[in-house]
Image (cartoon, rainbow, N blue to C red; front, side, top):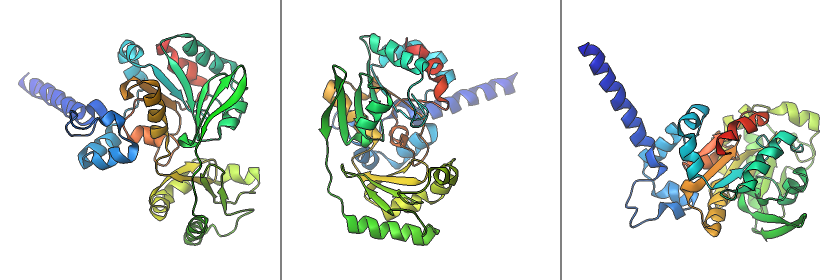
Length: 313
C-alpha cells in the first residue's frame, strides 16, 4: 500500500512539473515591465529563456481531442478570434470548400461572439477565389497582405511591398542546389513574388505537375535539409511550401505575427485566439503558431473539420 502511495505521489509531481514547464505559454520575466502579449515572434524568441523555448517545443500548445473533451466549455468561453488556414484545413489542397466545411464557417460566423478569419500562406486573391468568394477577412502571404469582402467583391486592405536582394537569393539558391544535388531544374531557379516573398522550387518554376506531386509528398527531403537552408538564409523566415519548394519571407512575416497583428488591431488578446491548421511541423507554414505557444487545433484530415470544431457551436 505504501509503495502505491509513493508511486501515486510521484505521478502527481511529474504532472505538476510538466504543467509548470508548459503553463501559461509565456516567457519568464516581469510581466508588469514587459507585455509579452504584444511581442513579435522574433522578440519572443529573444526574450524567452532557453528553458522556456524548449518547454514550448517539447510540450506544445496543441488542443487534441482529449483536452478539448475536458476543457471544451472553458475554451468556448475564452476563444473569440478563430483563425483558419486554408489548404489541408478548410479545403483539400487547391480545391473548393466542401459543403460540410462551409457549414462550419457559417455556424461560427453566425455567432456574434466570434470573429472568424482566414490566415494563409498564399495570395489573398487566390484564397478568395478558391473559397468561391466567401465573405470573410483574409490575412495572406504570411501577413504581407490583408483583404476583406464587401458586397461580394474582393477588397484589398493592405499589401506590403518588400525590397528583395535578388543577387543574394540567386547566389544562395545556387549554393543549396550545388550542395544537395538539385542542379537540374525546369524554368527559373527562384521566383520573386510582387509582395517580396521568394520561392525556391527545387525542381524549378516550370516543373511538371506530375513530377512535383511525387517529388516529396511527406516533405522528408526538405525537412532533412531545412536547418541548413535556414542557416543559409539567416535573418529570413523559411517555410517548407507547396510540393517541392521553400518559401522565404522577411523575418517579420509569419503566421504568428500575422495573427497577432490582426488581433491587436481588432482588440483581441493572445488568450482569446484559436488557430486551426494542418502544418505545424518544423518548417511548416503554421509552425510559428506552435513554437510561440499559441493555442491551436491540428487538422490531419480536412473532412474531419466539422467534428473537431463542434465544441465551439
